[in-house]
Every structure is written in structure tokens, then in C-alpha cells.
Image (cartoon, rainbow, N blue to C red; front, top):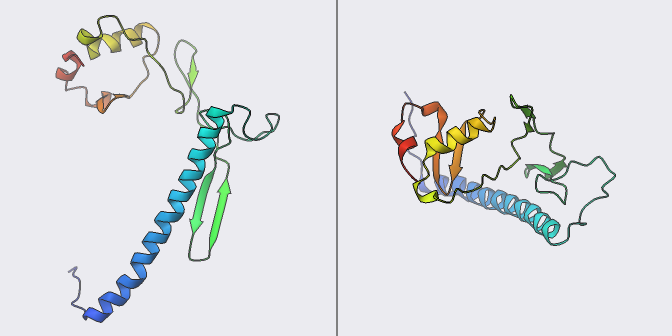
Length: 158
């Protein structure tokens, strides 16, 4: 049977004294790497010529501009490895359009958007040939097509 043995207070403090600094150090390292990627993204928006030479084969960020990096951390060694992310898989729609998971599709808002229903959006997407999608998400309101038995959400205006 699983259980946690009763341990002396000084032993618990010794173990926690090692875990808490490790969590704080790892969190700080990850936050620093995320901040670095955010600075590169902002710099690329402000100055489009920012980043590596465009003739190189470096993988560009999905937002254009500075190249994105994956980071692998092992703070016990200490080891930080930065690598280029692999190319994103491309998907071809029946109408011949190709896209990746990084692509953003902006759908024009209809003039009567307050009465525009999710079922109408799905119909518009199917008419345009974009019938391959799994999730619609905007402003914390989402519809997952795997759960299609919940047809009530499709008739509700957002």
C-alpha cells in the first residue's frame, strides 16, 4: 500500500531546503529564456530587419523576424542547449490550400456579428473549402468539434 512515512521535522526541512531553491532556480531560468524570446519577437516587430541574415537557412519565428530557439536545461550539470525548432508539419486542404499550426486565419466579421452563430461560421468555413478544423477559439469561448453532440452551443450567438 502506498503511504508517506512519518519523518522528523529536521529531515523534512533538509529535503525542502533542497527542493525549494531548485524550483526557484529552474523557474528563474525558464522565465529568463522566455523573456529573451519575447524581446526578440518585439525587436522583430519594431525593426523588421532585426535577426540573422535572410540568406541563411535559419528557421524563422512564426511571427517573422528573429529566429526562435528551443532550450534544453539541466541545472544539475549546468547545461543549457539551444537548438533550432524543427519545421512545422504542413497540412493540405481539399481545395489545395496548405497551412501549418503556426498559421493564423483571420475571418472577416460580418456586419451583424451580434447575431452571427457558430453554425453559420462553420457553414462559411465549409463553403470556403476550409472544412478541416478541430477547434475554434476566441476570447476564452471555444468549440471543440470532437464534442459535436453539444449542438446547443452552435445555435448560440457569441
